[in-house]
Length: 352
Image (cartoon, rainbow, N blue to C red; front, side):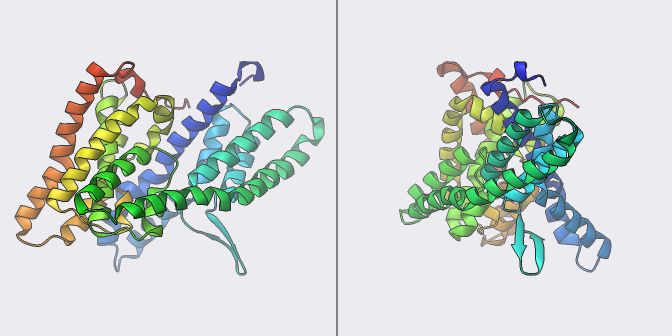
């Protein structure tokens, strides 16, 4: 990409598009296969190995986002590797221990974005200006400087997650109905952002009805984007959304914040459903929605009474009510909200 064609809007658009696509590439294998493999892999070496592979893939999310960002800017292959390495180092996914390096989780997406932006700026500033020394200096400067800044930022960025966690934890002290509504709405609004909702739920040990409300808040976010996306995006995008990987729509959400209105309304419905059906879960299941059936399975395991009745209730809670109410809310918002239409849900797939 020629520097003359680049402006602030294009720069941030490229970064957000890379984040959206990178999240899908990194997290989709585990989202599709993780729970199935957990169920069948005990005692099967090959299935255990496949499970380890899909976990490893998502651990490299920062590197994938960095490479895709470089691709958006049409940087060279070496520059793409440098940016991906920078993101990986500064993400927090790489843990430095006395025994060496270890991978832990996927890192902090906010910090990944910061590091990728710094690395891309450095490439834009330095590329073509160092002559024959470029291949010597850039591999040192870009990963070291970007990665170092990322690691310095990481403790401060984590305070954002902690503050949101404290807010959500305060909701658990309210009456159950109000708690369910507020948690579901908050999770719906935050689902398609760089915030890790699983990290928040784990940090505050969100369980029981609170976890169930959070889980249905994730479903509400997915449903919101599915109904907006179906008329304007290709089948591949819609299938990914139906699977539950709504974080790919981060660039869409950030460009059109009016989407927060249907997100909040669908979150409200989700909170009511969670309360009246009695959806419960664990800190780990809180941030997954129906992806891989993590939410429904955990909710089913915590329900009492007839199994068939519980399955029917979960079908209504996770699928029928959210999709029907989501469709109605989408149609109403198109009628009454200026600037709200199907076109704002258009997802730009990075070109090969």
